[in-house]
Image (tube, rainbow, N blue to C red):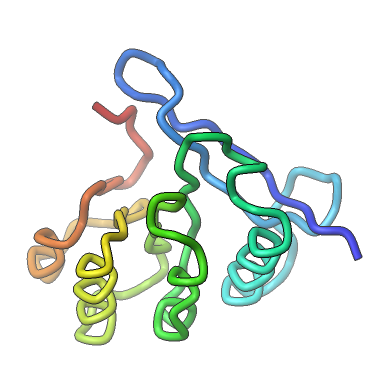
Length: 142
């Protein structure tokens, strides 16, 4: 069985490499396959457990997309908090379950990013736990 992932660089404001976003792929074609986001995340995490995040990203953190389901199943905690940024997928709706998971992850030392979210007043409850908000389009990090 082959495991594939795309590695997208994330740059800081000086255009220095800050991190990589790891994206699930199921072949050498660099396109997101027609699969459920939960399955994509679980397969990407599985590949990182088998190979190691550092083999993909060196000394840079890996931004990995998580759905609410994969957050509730504690998938982020399968990788050490120094190696990943927990990126909450844009399709995840804010709610009490998500807020609780963000609190727990922060208590464990994880860095949390919101991925392409659309600002709504309810997100203000999350801001104390969010380290990196990507509103609408990814911006260069400072």
